[in-house]
Amino acid sequence: MKFPQTFLGSCLCGAVIYQINSRPKALSHCHCSQCRKSHGAAFASYGSVPSADLQLLQGADDIKAYRSSESVLRQFCSNCGSSLFWSRRQGDFADWISIALGTLDTPFTSDKQKHVEVMSKASWYDIQDHWPQCQS
Image (tube, rainbow, N blue to C red):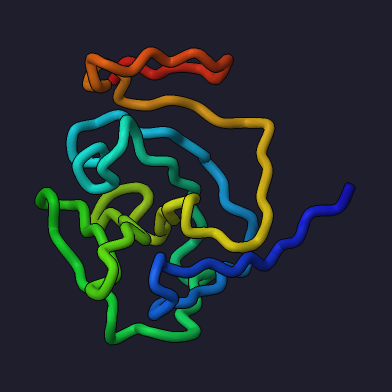
Protein backbone atom coordinates (compact mmCIF):
# COMPACT_ATOMS: atom_id res chain seq x y z
CA MET A 1 0.00 0.00 0.00
CA LYS A 2 1.38 3.39 -0.99
CA PHE A 3 1.06 6.22 1.55
CA PRO A 4 0.84 9.90 0.61
CA GLN A 5 3.88 12.10 1.06
CA THR A 6 1.82 15.28 1.43
CA PHE A 7 -0.41 15.69 4.46
CA LEU A 8 -2.96 18.35 5.39
CA GLY A 9 -3.79 19.43 8.92
CA SER A 10 -5.77 22.05 10.77
CA CYS A 11 -6.68 23.35 14.20
CA LEU A 12 -10.02 22.67 15.90
CA CYS A 13 -11.73 25.83 14.61
CA GLY A 14 -10.23 25.63 11.09
CA ALA A 15 -8.54 29.03 11.25
CA VAL A 16 -5.10 27.43 10.74
CA ILE A 17 -4.58 25.05 7.83
CA TYR A 18 -1.17 23.59 7.05
CA GLN A 19 0.48 21.14 4.70
CA ILE A 20 3.53 19.01 5.33
CA ASN A 21 5.44 17.81 2.29
CA SER A 22 7.07 14.73 3.78
CA ARG A 23 6.00 11.80 5.90
CA PRO A 24 6.32 12.50 9.66
CA LYS A 25 9.20 10.66 11.33
CA ALA A 26 10.20 9.94 14.94
CA LEU A 27 6.62 9.42 16.09
CA SER A 28 6.50 9.78 19.84
CA HIS A 29 3.99 9.99 22.64
CA CYS A 30 5.51 12.43 25.12
CA HIS A 31 4.54 12.10 28.78
CA CYS A 32 6.47 15.14 30.10
CA SER A 33 4.46 17.55 32.23
CA GLN A 34 4.72 20.35 29.65
CA CYS A 35 3.24 18.19 26.86
CA ARG A 36 0.52 16.90 29.20
CA LYS A 37 -0.44 20.46 30.17
CA SER A 38 -0.21 21.75 26.60
CA HIS A 39 -2.58 19.04 25.35
CA GLY A 40 -4.71 18.59 28.46
CA ALA A 41 -4.21 14.84 28.11
CA ALA A 42 -2.14 11.92 29.42
CA PHE A 43 0.42 12.50 26.67
CA ALA A 44 1.00 14.38 23.43
CA SER A 45 1.64 12.59 20.12
CA TYR A 46 4.05 14.17 17.67
CA GLY A 47 5.78 13.41 14.39
CA SER A 48 8.66 15.45 13.02
CA VAL A 49 9.48 16.83 9.59
CA PRO A 50 12.17 19.17 8.29
CA SER A 51 10.97 22.74 8.98
CA ALA A 52 11.18 23.52 5.27
CA ASP A 53 8.50 20.85 4.65
CA LEU A 54 5.85 22.70 6.71
CA GLN A 55 3.75 25.12 4.70
CA LEU A 56 1.08 27.29 6.31
CA LEU A 57 -1.83 27.52 3.87
CA GLN A 58 -4.11 29.65 6.02
CA GLY A 59 -4.10 31.39 9.39
CA ALA A 60 -0.43 32.26 9.91
CA ASP A 61 -1.57 35.36 11.82
CA ASP A 62 -3.70 33.15 14.10
CA ILE A 63 -0.70 31.19 15.36
CA LYS A 64 0.74 32.27 18.69
CA ALA A 65 3.97 31.01 20.20
CA TYR A 66 5.02 30.19 23.73
CA ARG A 67 8.63 29.54 24.73
CA SER A 68 8.17 26.70 27.23
CA SER A 69 11.91 26.46 27.90
CA GLU A 70 15.09 28.15 26.75
CA SER A 71 15.26 26.02 23.61
CA VAL A 72 11.65 24.94 22.92
CA LEU A 73 9.01 27.00 21.14
CA ARG A 74 5.41 25.72 21.15
CA GLN A 75 2.87 27.06 18.65
CA PHE A 76 -0.90 26.99 18.93
CA CYS A 77 -4.03 28.54 17.43
CA SER A 78 -4.93 31.76 19.22
CA ASN A 79 -8.64 31.22 18.47
CA CYS A 80 -9.33 27.67 19.65
CA GLY A 81 -6.13 26.85 21.56
CA SER A 82 -5.22 23.78 19.51
CA SER A 83 -1.61 22.77 20.06
CA LEU A 84 -0.06 22.57 16.59
CA PHE A 85 3.76 22.48 16.56
CA TRP A 86 6.85 22.58 18.70
CA SER A 87 10.43 23.12 17.67
CA ARG A 88 13.88 23.39 19.15
CA ARG A 89 15.82 26.54 18.30
CA GLN A 90 19.24 25.01 18.97
CA GLY A 91 20.99 21.67 18.85
CA ASP A 92 20.92 18.71 16.50
CA PHE A 93 17.30 19.09 15.37
CA ALA A 94 16.97 22.88 15.12
CA ASP A 95 15.96 22.53 11.47
CA TRP A 96 13.03 20.17 12.25
CA ILE A 97 9.52 20.87 13.55
CA SER A 98 7.24 18.49 15.43
CA ILE A 99 3.61 18.31 14.37
CA ALA A 100 0.81 17.46 16.82
CA LEU A 101 -0.46 14.31 15.10
CA GLY A 102 -4.02 14.85 16.33
CA THR A 103 -4.26 17.87 14.03
CA LEU A 104 -3.60 15.88 10.84
CA ASP A 105 -6.61 15.64 8.52
CA THR A 106 -4.94 13.27 6.05
CA PRO A 107 -5.07 9.63 7.22
CA PHE A 108 -1.75 8.54 8.65
CA THR A 109 -0.39 5.27 10.03
CA SER A 110 2.98 4.22 11.35
CA ASP A 111 4.42 0.92 12.49
CA LYS A 112 7.18 2.63 14.46
CA GLN A 113 6.32 4.73 17.51
CA LYS A 114 7.59 5.16 21.05
CA HIS A 115 6.65 6.60 24.42
CA VAL A 116 9.11 9.20 25.75
CA GLU A 117 9.55 10.88 29.14
CA VAL A 118 7.67 8.01 30.80
CA MET A 119 9.25 8.79 34.18
CA SER A 120 7.07 11.92 34.13
CA LYS A 121 3.85 10.21 33.05
CA ALA A 122 0.54 10.94 34.75
CA SER A 123 0.09 8.71 37.79
CA TRP A 124 -3.45 7.82 36.69
CA TYR A 125 -2.41 6.54 33.25
CA ASP A 126 -1.05 3.04 32.53
CA ILE A 127 0.71 2.48 29.21
CA GLN A 128 -0.90 -0.64 27.76
CA ASP A 129 0.38 -0.79 24.18
CA HIS A 130 3.45 -2.50 22.74
CA TRP A 131 5.45 0.60 21.76
CA PRO A 132 8.94 1.04 23.31
CA GLN A 133 9.24 3.26 26.39
CA CYS A 134 12.12 5.66 26.95
CA GLN A 135 12.68 6.44 30.61
CA SER A 136 14.20 9.92 30.17
